[in-house]
Amino acid sequence: MNKKLVALAVAGAFALPLAAQAQTANVTLYGRLNLDLEFIKGGQADGSNPVVNRVSSNSSRLGVRGVENIGGGLNAIFQIEQNIQGDTGNSSSSGLASRETFVGLQGNWGTVQAGKFLTPYDDIHPIFGNAPTLTTSIFSTAAIWGGTSIDKQSGGFDDRLGNSIRYNSPNWSGFTGAFQYSTRDSSGNANAGDNGDHISELRHASVESLGLFYNNGPINIGFDWEHNAKVRGPGLNDNAYTIAGAYDFGTIFKSFGFRLGGVYEKLKYDTPTGSITRDFYGVSGTIPVGGGSFYGFWGKANNGNGTAPDGQQLTPGAAWVVKGPDTSAQQWEVTYSYNLSKRTLLYGGYVKINNKANARYTFGINPYTIGVGQDPQAIAVGMVHFF
Image 1 (cartoon, one colour):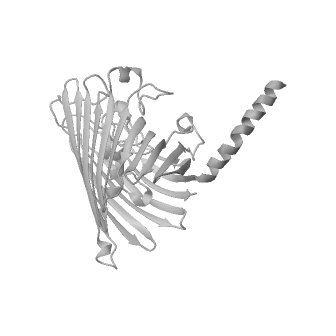
Image 2 (image 1 turned 45 degrees about the horizontal axis):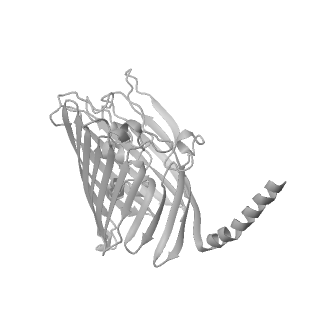
Image 3 (image 1 turned 60 degrees about the vertical axis):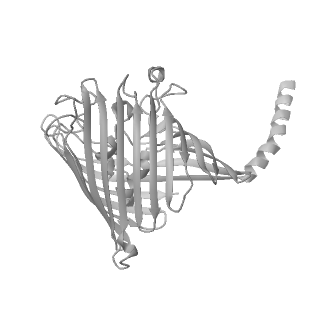
């Protein structure tokens, strides 16, 4: 009985300070549900080419974020965000803090945060990517750009990494920058793809990512660089850089709001038998029509080059990064998105990936399994609600 009284006394002592702190913090619950219906056709390894339909959840999420003014022009910030599998219900990959989760400090000098979040390499994607459909779903232009949807253990870029520290600069007349350092360690409940493991930390594996951007008026320009140091194995380093730009002609021609974007990317991978390099480039256009936006994109990943012998893959079965002829691919898509309200969006469109005989690129978000040299294509219609 005395232990219970002590516990109540301790709880009462903390109650008032915690309540006072809560009154000075601005906490927001937020999220979005993004689901679509897809009709997909893509050749299989056995030679069949069926048309399948599926319902997919695309970067749906639930989160809570907050900011507290701690004086001297300084704010404490936090965010906890989880993935939501809106099509099937949550799975083991959709637990609490499975998406952007961090704590940090913010001032007129910029923002420092620690936790799990996308690298600056992802920040360049909206400059040329399908921003009208939130750069996600099978309409994501990361199907070929950024090393596709593979994780760090397989050589991917544009990843969400745990065990990270990041700095975001303030805005200087349209110029901003960001740098992120991610240790590949075994702390917590580590997943080797997103975070690291004990073997990785023993060889001092790490990821460094740098982004520089200019966004002012009709002009949007970005440069990204990312380095995976000994992530896939001892002595194996991966490097990527992307340059992208866009110009909104709507600021000049008021009756013709056309936005033109372009991108170039260079990937370089080490393998035990030599290097593999790959170039990617693409163009996009966005036109406001009838209260919504048409978006079109074409992008091409060239053949794998470098010093490695022909047929060398980055990882076993990874036919999207291969040295040799006929390893290139092209992505085509056209979509239309329409805002029913400030919080509800409808979209639909068509996307196709043309693979050469020795390539196997597939959709970047919610990938579809195909055989080598096959061409996945899809029609999809979807709805997003923000809250």
